[in-house]
Image 1: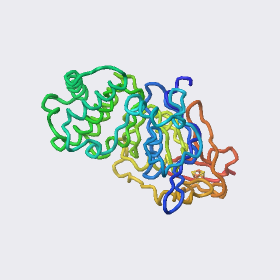
Image 2: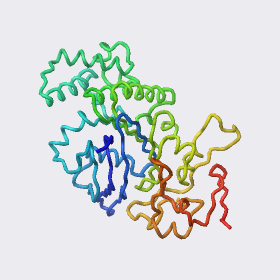
Image 3: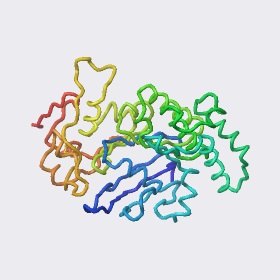
Image 4: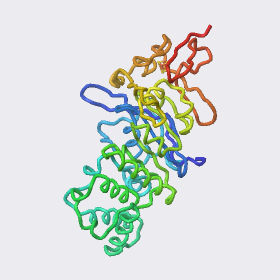
Length: 347
Ligand code: SF4
């Protein structure tokens, strides 16, 4: 197992739909270390949420098809576990929070009821006999730990009585109530305004330091990544196209899609007259994925080989990899500077 909490090995996942087989993940590999914060980045439909939900096996088993690969949690393959064994892992060892806390919280139950339910359920499974009174006390402590004042009042309130930021804090409190080893956060700040986003990220960082949990954060927002992640994987069209440390991705990016993502975000050191550049085109149709590189139809550098063969993985140091033919030593293109996209042919 090494020091990996989680290891995804060559994971291929499809969904069976009326329109045909959607090839959602095309063989992805990555690891999450102990107490590490990993960000999984990409546009909608790139496979990042499928990856997150596959870890907890949350998909409908009648439509999902795990075609190949392993999801190793502390060395155990989660795909090989029975549903009963998975239930012991969900929430207690691996927790998840979602984009919109309003749809994750039950609108008909008080916040206190929802937090204490989670505490009591997991204490039962562990054979502890936490009573309602102790659970209430723990719930108040959890609410305080996620930075919400006046916990006794909040415990009596319903979700609609709280702001979006507070509801997301409550979801984090519920997710952390069983001291999970891994917290998966699927677009946890997308529904929130910018200042609240920053507060939620600060909270997640603080809780990670305190608890030592590993965090997998799923996002389409490179700003979120810069704030929180130590390691980053960039996904496109159901595959990982680049991965590395935060420094690798922000300062030494190798893949044209990563360049596109970086050029499309606002940075404080950017010249105010310099425009934000969107990535033209649309993501590939995963009902009929392209034969070669999935980014080829949108890539300024696409060559003949790109349309015919999937690029292999190239390494740049211990953690940094990129799946792009531009990284091949025989590539005829010379890329001068990704910021101005100057394409030159080698002599
Ligand atoms: Fe562009 Fe080719 Fe690299 Fe794909 S493999 S990103 S098409 S240069």
